Image 1 (cartoon, rainbow, N blue to C red):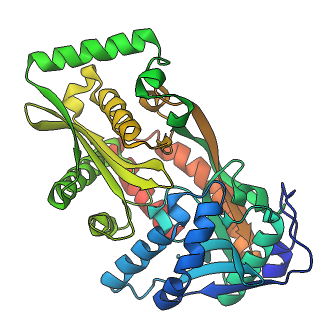
Image 2 (cartoon, rainbow, N blue to C red; image 1 turned 60 degrees about the vertical axis):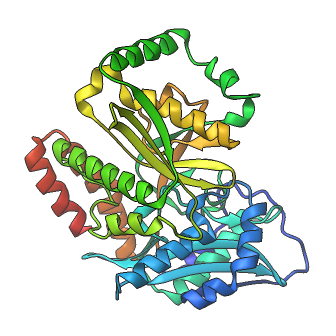
Length: 400
């Protein structure tokens, strides 16, 4: 199996858009911060005009990742940002980085396990398959690898439409609940669409909590408050994962807490942080990002001693209300699908993982590990006791 050509030149699975004739397409790869900054104006213009653009392919996210890796002096950080121009116009961006594991070299989305979705920024009217082909060719030529791993691709996105027919689906299909606030005149109009029994149960749960002390919701804006909230949610989420014997790509990176802390006050990142308290003590907290007029939930934690009162559900209702009051068009609640998210979601977007083998070694590992062994192994360990499950999952992910 050959490298870039065998993969990238096959047409996209859903390609239908036209590309203006007579315009030369030129792809190159950006790997340094100064070259990234030189693209700032045209990158932001592409973001503004790209359908389905989200935070995790934004210039702000790329800068935050570069800044963090520089701050921790990571010698293994290997950015591979493929950009495509038509004449002088920037028409597509695919932000990647190269990582090395025990078994292979892989191109993955920039930020690796820290991002929520993988996508390609694409100008309107550009054939996604042709753009993806050029971007992959440039990326693989600049950073030779065994495979390209593209995780959490939303159905119907530019990247989904541009994937080569040779792409191999890996892992299990997931869903990302979404609340389209702009479908309603105001929050009251939206909230009225939630089942009356659910709204009654939420009122009753809040009343029971308030019998023990005042319940308040706050949107934290001061950096010191945001930092404290982020610290608490990270600690709470890490403890919950340990209790369940689970892990995640982000929490397996020891630098993830520092990455999150560095986002506070970052000039390119717009944070929203929310806290629901009882008698001044947090019982549910969440934070995320605002980009393109939408909120992206990122990390949440709650007090499980109050599970009977569903503080996570109560808090999410307050989060959505605060986002509506800010005038945001919608709230992306992120993967995975969970019952409390579905209470509020107006739709759920299908999310899938894909791999593109580049070498024969990459194809064998993709088919053997990503498609066959890892899903079977994951199912097995999820049935194990929590302590054994934690050790087993840690070993399995390190070998990948």
